[in-house]
Image (cartoon, rainbow, N blue to C red):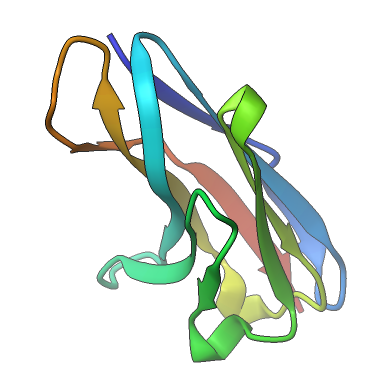
Length: 121
């Protein structure tokens, strides 16, 4: 069984920083793309950033220059460093991973349970 668990959310003042972490555990053969999404209250979930196994990254325009996604392939971890936070960054942040479980030849998308980030003005 595969599980993704996020950590690092919390309350921060505008202009501050937070670092989110997400670890994938279980019977994993390989992990392709890992990503962070966020969902503000009452709004559809949106993509924040993605990173391939080779380290290629992609960001939403709203976070470019402020957020940095990174990963540790040996530990099956993905991180999101968030700087210069704004009140509009307030949301539940979710990580996901497109991965192949051991014993399978297919790629499945798994999601974490989410972690709340609140930015006060």
